Image 1: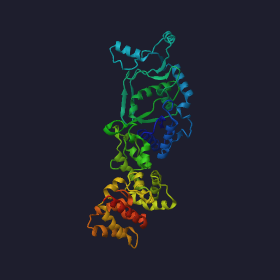
Image 2: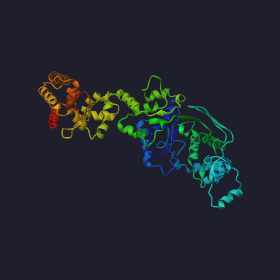
Image 3: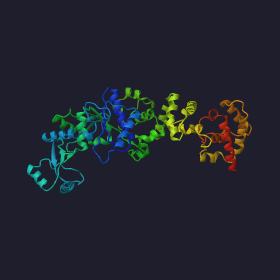
Image 4: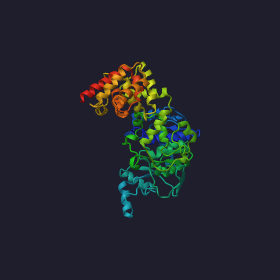
Length: 486
């Protein structure tokens, strides 16, 4: 198996889904996964994008057996370092009569189609296949530079796709295509199959958008085999496209296509990989949540659907939430730390103990780790930096809230012990029984005064962890805020 991205832009979730399926197929069969980089387009490739690919695979835990950063018997693993290999392959193809020089310009090809009454946009018409040496010399004398084209077979190309079954491309359906420029500069249609042939790839899982290029790859692999390179065509599986809203292909412009967007929001690798696996495959009809080990044991590429797979953010969050709930409490707490840092909170040793106590209160309520960080942040802010969310304060710390907060302060001030149970009994006595309020009306102002948010960890436990002094200080600040709204 191979994973062979170009280092351009930020890793796309569709690209990572392809990497995951290749990884799972290799691991299921005890095979080898090769990670190589297709970086021959200097205008688009970047060191930052290459590093982003490494960061993505390392964060997700998708390891490889040979390739960049690891080495192996088939290196180098960057196309930019394999120029001599491609030159040798092209030379052999030319000497073997598999490739020929083509001088036709785009305008000439269109003119020939028009003269024959065909669609001028049909593409190359194979007109240069049998140029004589004299014709080639005449073109060169005009200052023309050729390209090198593969001579496509005159018979149908049929292969069995592991996802889509038997597929046939009729003879003549795919014109002779360009492998290299006249100066020998190799193009992607040459470099990719040459790498596959020399790296002894046996199975290729890739997106269905590349299906149209498969007959060209098969024809070239057959030609390479005839000139002594590789063992001919291998097994293909074309994976369904990952789509966005309206079943259109998920564009790089869509935020949900950006792998790091999900990491930065607080997806954990287990949750995101689980969801990406569901984009075209399932472990069972009645089960959506599973781990990577279970996926490897069960993965069968022939069970991948050929239908487009829509990236559903809500479903992805639900899967991630399930994995958050499966984490050990101390593991969950440790994973929240970087997201608290993103909120501007660097924990002291004492605060790490507080986080360990508080994290279980939000573990069941969080879909992503940033949810947990936002819900817990109030515990770690001092009174100078703590401020309720303006919208939440506007709705809940208004003039109507003043008597509620006054009653809460009065009931809590003399509380003999500061425990969640005692706090609950006091607030219910003061607000529900004493003021005759419904619980929702009674506790919303208290929650916003304490946590700054309308959504928080359980209120009584939060106040116990915050402590008597800080809780009463925040309720007092809430009173002053509501009085100012009067």
